[in-house]
Length: 152
Length: 153
Image 1 (cartoon, rainbow over the protein chains, first blue to last red):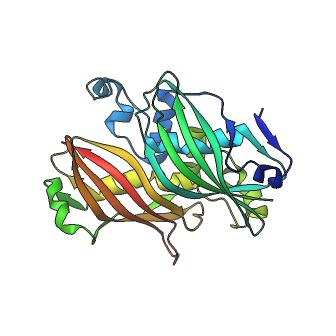
Image 2: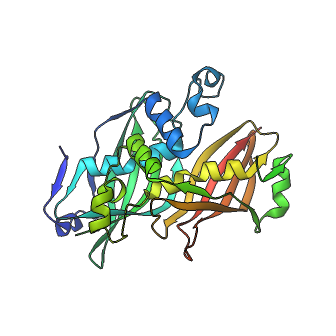
Image 3: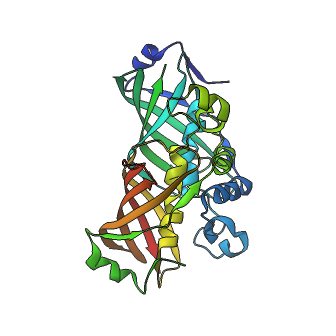
């Protein structure tokens, strides 16, 4: 169930400058990390070798930064119901930083603040201020300005 | 086999501002897109519903997730360039990232890399890469980015 529901894009436009939604927590286990390694060909030991990773500076395996980033689509789409839109397209990011490691088995969630709303042909371009949090950690794991387009 | 091997990260310094290395071509089949969808729980129809995408998508068929194309950067760079004397690489983020064209399932991609900037940090270096991902047969790149990574000795 989405946590925030909008009937149309105009209703979302009224939220510029505000935090629109915070996602549910999601477990990021080793199985997901291994699958991501398979999908992307990134099998670096800090991600997929739990034995060797005990000697890494993190003491255990960590998720790929690109995995935590790629979870943004899930976090947004499961948190927010964009009424009447047919398709979403990822446009990119402005400044983005992986601010802390995500250990295998962590729980993550994402805060979405709508920074900018721009009309484009057939829909809208949305710029989100993103903060991804790791349960029990004071420091966020990802901060970014993420740009997506929604088409009606 | 890495296409270029350097013994030490210092050898990157004189290359700043020039193109350094181009990766091999990699095919992105539908199966890989499906695996990525499983790993990230992004099962939007434009990526995984082949029939609907052929029928309804403005791209004429299923396309790779932008985040999949982006996530291949690690593979492209690590297979194209071996940096001796470093033990571990850490992904620091992007200054800017744009998905500039869709990547149809079955496309072949490669990454072009140059060093934009390099600076010493504790225990290693931070490198800012100028990155372009090309799609075979397409004039427009699929991705352009300024990517920031750290290498530790």
